[in-house]
Each structure stands twice: as C-alpha cells, then as structure tokens.
Image (cartoon, rainbow, N blue to C red; front, side, top):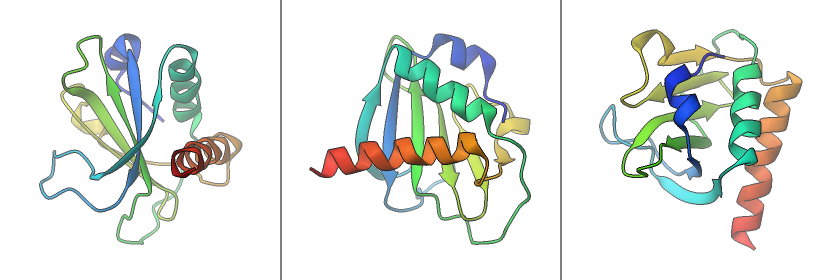
Length: 131
C-alpha cells in the first residue's frame, strides 16, 4: 500500500481511533474513541506494516471501517492524513492535506501477514484502552 511519502517522513505522532460511525462530511475525521497514541519506534513499525499491505480485491460491504490511524507532524494541530481500514471489504480510505487523489482509495489482502499483524495491534490497543 502506498502512503504519502512526505507525510510519512514528517509523522511525529499517530492516533489510533476505534471508529464508531462514518464521518458526516467527506473530509471530516472518522468519529470514534482514540485508543492509543504511537510515537517514536511505534510510528515506524506501524507505518511499515501499513506500507507492506499487499494489494487486494474490492469486496462490497458498504465500507464499514473499524479502525483508523491519524498521522500528525510536529505541530500536532491538524492530521497530515487519516487512513481508515475496513477488513471486511479490504479497503483503506485516506484523506487529509498530504493525500494525493490516487492514494485516497486502496485495497489490501486482510489475510496477509502484515494485515493480520496490524489488526492484532489495533485489537490489542483497543483492549488496553477498555481495561
């Protein structure tokens, strides 16, 4: 999967969001509870997993993402990009000022090891946030 290279290079913080609904407007953040903040090596590890997501085929589920990541630069004021993951329809939707149109919608194989590892990370931080 392709991420916006300039944004990846300047990411200082990632928020992990357990999505509760779809945004009201196209470029609004996905609503939900922030379940983790990743910094330092966690950023590099997470973005590497995301970039390793292999191409998949589109499946129709109506796009019901469970988690998103929001990447912030040093200013921490506005997300450089947000990527929302639907492991059912195998789609990632990205938006934000750093996202060129060709990267806004991509597909991945949820059975591939990087996707399973990413989903396990999402579930682990979500479970930690609940306890």
